[in-house]
Image (cartoon, rainbow, N blue to C red; front, side, top):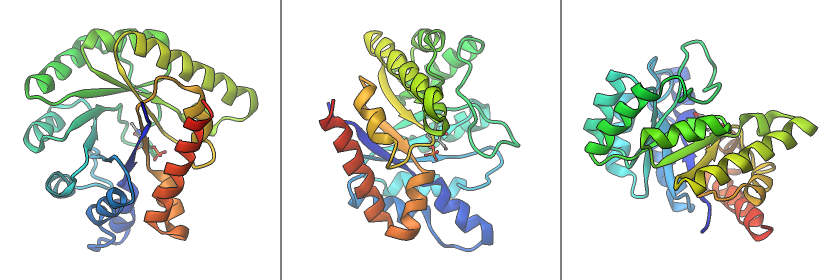
Length: 244
Ligand code: PXP
């Protein structure tokens, strides 16, 4: 099973919103990423609409020919948008207004009943749900109970940590992925991944089907071009897989 790359194009919209222009366009970016080999496109429609706008999600739904992953908070407003736009998958994330980016995983243990209803409503509409969680056994088990078919493991501590902290985080990710795999979940991962740290993650964390990568890839694109940045990440992922 190979690990697929889904590119999060939020930051293309961040740049556009900084000036209120029509460019750069996240839809254009999505097409470039797909042509460069990305297996999917991810966007986070935040409650405050700080980067991606509703129209972006609608146009992406028409244009994306791989898979469209809509990240969103578990709110009634977002649920209605997901049911209307019909992404290929919804990723539920926690959202705090003042955060710079998603800061931690969903507390599925504490919100199990509410999230189970959410996952069920989306499943009834034929839309699978992924839950973005910290690599903690109790969160994996609670995720299974919601009926969600996919979990996305938060890789932020691994990606931003140093030395022992990063090593411990990698072990936690490997253990959570293994547990989720034995429970029949599809395992995704993301947050803070770069072309330097993604290979080691892929080498050590099994099973792993999908990565969601945004900030570092879009940053690399400024200097290398977007197609080249996608190719570099694909090469780093393939390198990690070859060393398993
Ligand atoms: N996965 C989820 C659930 C996220 O919220 C984000 C950030 O929007 C990412 C992956 C991508 O993280 P990064 O931009 O650090 O690569």
